[in-house]
Amino acid sequence: MANRIRVPWVQWRRFRVTGVVREQDTGRPLAGLRVQAFDEDLRNDDFLGECSTDADGRFKILFRDADFMDLVESRPDLYLLVKSADEDVILDTSFEVRQNASEDEYYELTVPRQRISSAN
Image (cartoon, rainbow, N blue to C red; front, top):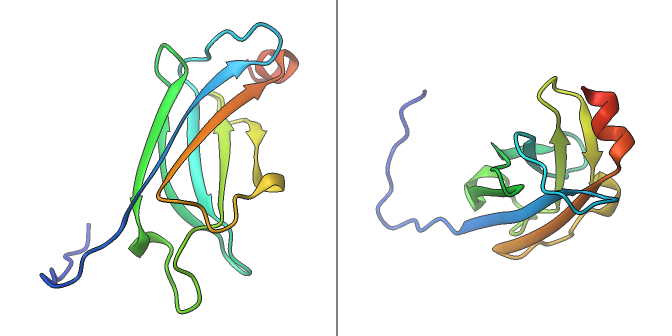
């Protein structure tokens, strides 16, 4: 990990993405899936963080504005990928990007049963 210079007068804004992942037909929470958050950009999307869903299908990803901010962007254009244990993408929200997302975003994600079973 690279050493970073601490600048005491800079206060980074903190962002949080939380939510739950469930099976679409039954509403059953889906544990052990990996959720990744991205900021959509014109050239290269910024990776913001990732975590695994818990036993209740819940997840929480924390990041700072320094992880995505540039000259024209002060809020992320947020989307998520949900991956199986085998790294297969089973849900992609990039077609529903949350433009200029707030500092606290909540998602209720549902995955069709066939996507879950085909990933295993």
